[in-house]
Image 1 (cartoon, helix red, strand yellow):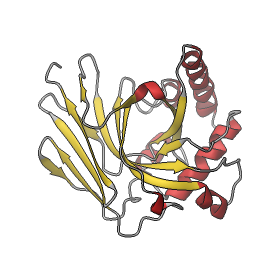
Image 2 (cartoon, rainbow, N blue to C red):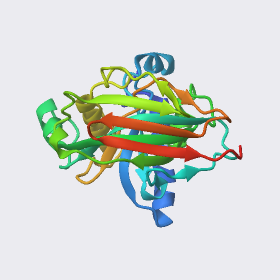
Image 3 (cartoon, helix red, strand yellow):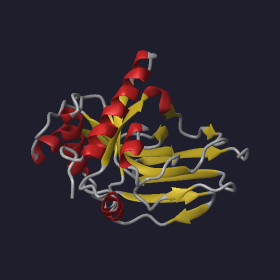
Image 4 (cartoon, rainbow, N blue to C red):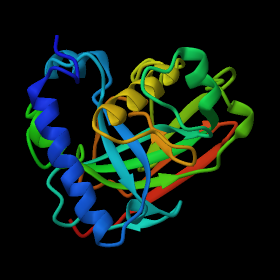
Length: 237
């Protein structure tokens, strides 16, 4: 299975993605973090990758908790309950586990909204479009969870008033948080950037894919005991 260093799909896709990022930065946006996608075992096997794909997050993508979003014109809107890992120290490529662990300053809940507007099997195009990224909602952060401490954390998801099962092991569908942080540091360094203090990573959906339907009205994600965030949807799609 190819790695990000020798997979031409990833090389071309990341080069295109970083051009897109630069265009948006030149237009006044600011980068605030990174995202990963397709970290679940089945997704990695389907895409023939050995680790998640990496994309960028900009300040203009951030929505306030409780925001109402119109999905009119979206092709296949998806909502994902995620864990945000906040970075307290710059992390270079090749950092060992203890160094990566020490760089994690806090954890918190996040919701990502994405639009699956191209085939997910097309790795190059997916990367070039920043892995379908549209919006992110950030909740409270808990500094007592520094070092990716997950003990006693649990997740609850409600979609349009109905419960969605969340694995008791919050890393089951995404992989280990420390390894995700190391991977992001390696990828962004390989493509001439750096994982920096003050940034954060949203680490992939803790549940299976949540493809939104026209009848969906809202989504609630609780990372207990850290806190709860919600997003609402308008019925105009």
